[in-house]
Length: 309
Image 1 (cartoon, one colour):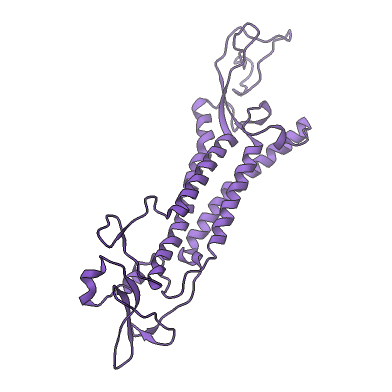
Image 2: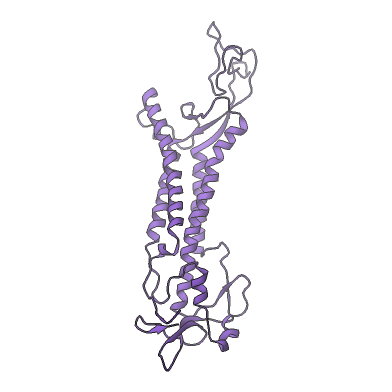
């Protein structure tokens, strides 16, 4: 390729991540918020219609077990099945955290890169030597990684109070557990109410083991969805920050990164051990074409009118 003019446009942070990454991440987050809210809407309409409660969200409290908010997908589900269902949101949240963290990683890696065009900085390596600096322990600067971990932990806790597993045992006045379904007459759900006999008394001749069910908390779901929505909005708005002018946007493209790393041969041994900066390191006296690369010495910022290699 021949000499070109240096692109000194101040790019938005969101441009460092691919459109596919943005679309997939936001679709997953949107689905993770919308689906629980749609399920909550159906549950609240049923509660308002059958029980005539004024405000189900406030009435049933935060993370409180209540017979009205039992969550049943299929009849006959056992202990392990209900435990798995109660923890599926935790798994989905972990996946969303990884994708959300990936967006910030792309943006902050580019911010680290473009900073070389504004000042001298040491290289960031895994095992630093003299004149170098170490990588971030959590993969991101602490100003980002610590708040993200705190918010992730808070959401995991809120999710655990939004849908949780309970083990219910019914007892009669003599301290014996009820038989909760009649296997001879019906195949009722394991979450059915205790069976009555013809005289109206409990059929408690055979004690029954505990009932495994899941319970949802309307208030916890609303709080979780509100916090998750706020995080998504923050991530989108954060992408509208601008990188400093000086270096072309390379993001994580290895070809672009390699094209910017052609220093003068005599400087190669010392570049790895000391602050360096990207800019104009030399200029052809005949053609006036400048050479852009990294240097430990003084460099000139490129202009938008000259040609560079």
